[in-house]
Length: 474
Image 1 (cartoon, rainbow, N blue to C red):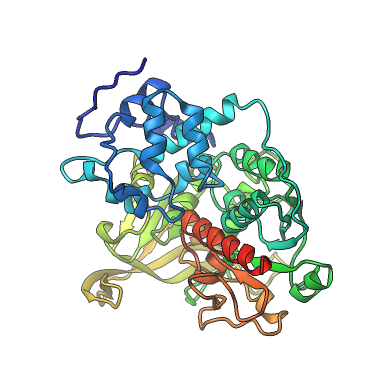
Image 2: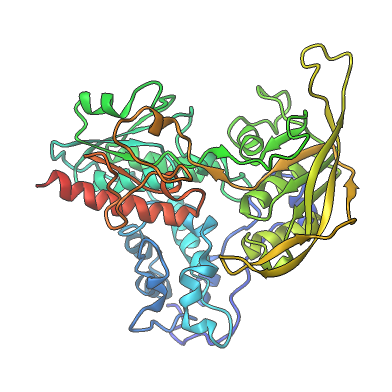
């Protein structure tokens, strides 16, 4: 029997990881996961607070103290069954959610020490279930209603899963050739193994969800045509796949990527393999512009692809860096060089007169940057970066990866009458329901908010699924 005594250690049980000098050269998962014994010891740090403040920090309202109580008892399958009541993707969330700013930020244990490792425990439970489950979920009898879901990212999969549990006949339309959305094209294997995403997709298929790949809604079919095919409601979870650029000279040079393209080529198209079907620049010196999780992913991917030097170029200081602390620490341990308080002003290059295919654009030879200092806070409360005159310098690189955010793709808006968007291209919805300005159409995730977290997209998928059920049950 597990030890019933509470664990009052002020620190979390550490997460075992690959050694930095080893993992920097492979695409295997960095974090290795808790053992059963470690999971129980971490669960015993939970005080089982009656008012459950941690739950208020979870966008999908996982019953956190309840699943942790099951871990204390050694009932790992029972813990999984509690999590899956709220979350369609527990193995994913346990790996990529920013728990430190969500559920764990509300944990009482964090007042005088470190919070309970809720994310690490969720990952353990999901992995234990996946390793021991002997059958896929059962299909729920049909209720006779058909719903289309556009996009198979976290919001689309969550919406599809919640509706399938209620008996809806759900078809998910995915533009790419593999289901999973940003989970497969945007997040590297070393952070989120693709087999885990596939397992979650397989569970939905077993529940009766139909996955249709290579279906670009707005091109292959329009929203209106989906209604003509008998779908009674449509959920749009098409993400934010349109990359932003800075608009500085040299961005059209060969060797300049958006992080979106760079990661898609590596993650989805397997460009890291020998003789890949899609090319990608490997080796050399790489600069990644930006400071979010995607920038960390791109920098660490470039290192694993053989770059001799990788820089993160970010215009603010370490304190303002938006990426998860864990990802920043992992990047630093692996040798990524952080050029903080610097901003690019031009990408330099030379022209190859022998390249008749593209005589206008040459190859990257460096990036001119200017040093910055922090001024007064901006409208978001972050101190505004200000250029220091005369501080320009050239960073010696031959690949530049722009990771300064993405916007929703305008394709669906441009092909759908009555669907309104905001000035950033995000679909306008009712916050409480996800309903758009077009009857029967709902939306959520990055297609609404712009680039955000996996768990917030899942929360939007849950909200929309509930609203669709109420809409079709009238």
